[in-house]
Length: 119
Image 1 (cartoon, rainbow, N blue to C red):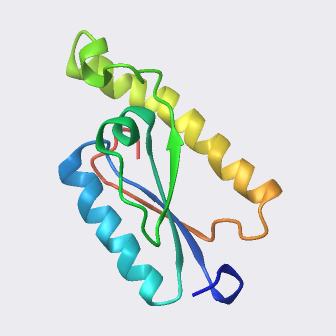
Image 2 (cartoon, helix red, strand yellow):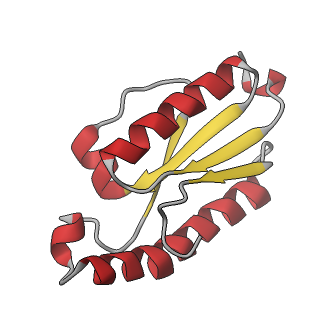
């Protein structure tokens, strides 16, 4: 289905772990079969390490400033969650603004993983 025929455009924001990303990606694929354009936002390290297959779901990268080794760059789980909450939220906001101001198909809805801190 061409982009011009799509109705809504959803941004899907999963917690950056495989057990969270894969189900959200599958959900995005399902939404595209219903005429909804889907964009999955995930961090650069996940994209680099998993090399997601090209699908009907657009992949956009955001940064949590832990783009080299991820969780290993932090001292604790709390430190990682804090990075994700502060930096991840900032770069996600930038992605939303970029799509709103320069795209002919801005996001109509954001679907986020409840496991993301601060959501």
